[in-house]
Amino acid sequence: MKDKNKSYEMRYHLDKSFLDSPRSYGDISLVQIGRMHCSEHTVINEHLHRNWFELTIITDGKGRVKTNHKSVSVCRGQIYLSFPGDLHGIESDSDLPLKFDFFSFEAKDEMIKDELEAIMQNCIDAESRIISDDRINYLVSNAIAEISGSERFSDIILETIFKQVVFYLIRGFRSVSSVSYTGTNVGRADELCYRIMNYIDTHIYTIKGLGELSDTLNYNYSYLSDLFHEITGDTLKDYYRRCRLERAKILLLEKNLRVGEIAELMGYSSIYTFSRAFKAEYGVCPSFLLKKEI
Image 1 (tube, rainbow, N blue to C red):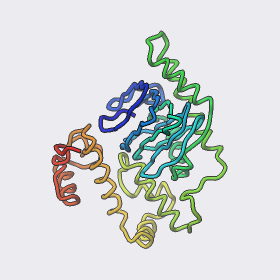
Image 2: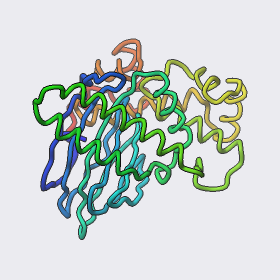
Image 3: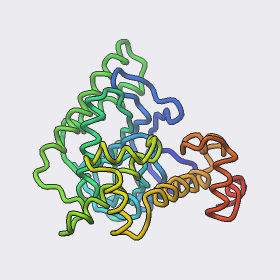
Image 4: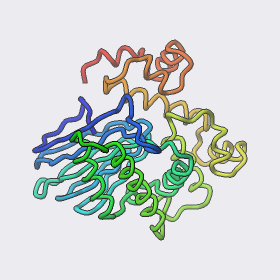
């Protein structure tokens, strides 16, 4: 939740952050956890998530959560799930300012990863990312208190809490009876293209090759490639290339990582390869954006 390029006012903010080196608690790696009490003017600008999931747990007030330029209303008792690769922002209501806890994590266990993968494939729309579960609210609140102290057995307690939170999260999304991929009645081909784009968007930091789409969606790659081009007028390779460069551009503008770190994060073989691709797309070298004032 912490980012130097975000613009916000808050009444209270607690953030335990391990963005560069997530802290391991058994099967769960903690990226960040904390609490924010917003003012009536609080706006957290859209920022790019890397390879982690994040829960935004509304404890009071109301506001809007923005995901990939689309916003949804949230209120007390609701939990919003953000995916890896999301552009994520928050805006507080001016009359009833938001109070929320947040918990960002990565999973190491393969079974948990598979369950989260299913959620990402099924809950593409921002509207389908909301659940309610008082147990998750209570557990994350306990974790915030536990990690803020230095009591004996804290690591064991936190490992237990985090695993419970993730399992309750998975159970909560499994219990959702009807999920729409696009929020509208679309044909199978359009829906499949939407799922292709969602997979690339949410796996932009980890995808090793577009052949992964075949295993994930259970279709021959040539079929997916031809279908995508027929429906969108674009090629899968071009869509993937632009996604990588768009994420890289956002990371450069955030100014939190060096060019070499971004090149590695986005899967380029070298800084030279990354810089050449970036300049071909945007007409400037990556280093130009690092020097540019936003």
